[in-house]
Amino acid sequence: MNDKPYEIDETELHAWIDGQLDSDRAGAVEAAIAADAELAARANAYAEQNREIRALFGGVADEPLPERLRVANIASRQSRRRWLIPVAASVAWLAIGLAGGWLANGWLGDRALVDASRHVAQEAMSAHRVYAVEVLHPVEVFADQEAHLVKWLSKRLGRDIRTPDLAPLGFQLVGGRLLPAKGGEPAAQFMYEDQTGRRVTVYISLYESGQETAFRYQDGAFVWLEPEMGYAITGDIPREPLLAVSNIVYETFEPTH
Amino acid sequence: MFLQELEQWSPNLRRYARALTRNAEQADDLVQDCLERALSRRHLWKEDGNTRAWLFTIMHNIHANDTRRRGSRPAPVPIDDQDGHYSRPASQQSRIVGLELTAALEELPAEQRQVILLVALEGMSYGQVAETVGIAQGTVMSRLSRGRERLRRLMEEGAPSLRVVK
Image (tube, rainbow over all chains, first blue to last red):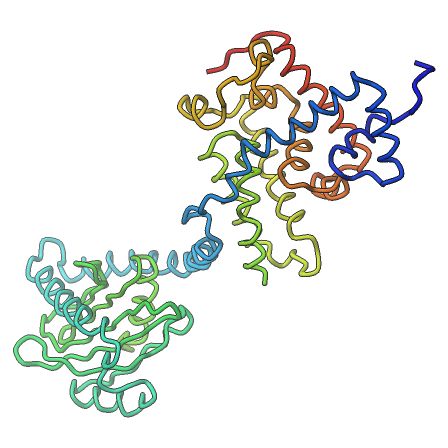
């Protein structure tokens, strides 16, 4: 081994293969390889490993990313998960409402009440389907005239109507409109929109059921009844965030007795 | 800025994860875990720092934890993947006695495999590998030379003891 003309370090050989060796030492490695067939074979084998690894897996980086790995999707999933805390709270609240309100009203087995909720839910869904897709005329009165809108709808429904503040959930008021409900009674619809264009509508109708319920999920809407009113929340969003919206709306209209 | 950086490195993470796990589903799980963790630790991200090293370090830690949790059991590899995706038909006579590269990689200690893959796939400098894995640069170089030599022998001479895992 004494007659080896060029002493090189094993790590220098690898650095040379990976193009990470200073140029002055690179010359020494090249000379050593030229003088030593065994070393040349090894260097070649190591370089071939790199090439083969790249050939095997390199293409993965060019494959389109699946939806679940898109950063925007993961980010929005996470922000949705942050809702779960208020949602969990409202689920607990809902359970109390169910136990208290519905049982107290003899809810169990009361078909009339199911029909009433369903009726309100279906009217709300129809109105949502018709107007939420509108681009130019989604509402009669836009949010820039919110005070006028509230005053007008309150007057027509004969109730003190307010616009729920859904901004904490990322939804801004678009505006509202008056609608015909069952038996020629008026109903009001408020429309909200988030930054991605998803819309939720709050539907309030004069509806005499004589009953009071906590809310339930019915035909795609969260619905609850007061003796003379029906409320339904529908939207282009999954059930959990819709529940969070419903919770805020419920609190907004909760009778303060 | 932060989200764009994450997006930019996602394909690299996916490529490395695939090589690391040799299982497409498991690799994507790993990438997803990594991106989720990165997003939730946004406050630790430095705009002028090395985002790639940061992300690869996160992925490393998750992978190390996963591996530890599963014990030393090798990752499950679906048979169709093993036959189709990752192995190629033997093209040289050395294949007759030696192992395929992917099988040989599997025989290496994880610490050597990681270093070899980061250099080959990511083209990372030894310094960047050291930063990513959290070891000294000298250790990177010795793992690299030991790993590659082991790989070479496995591919030329075959496994010391035949191991059939299915």
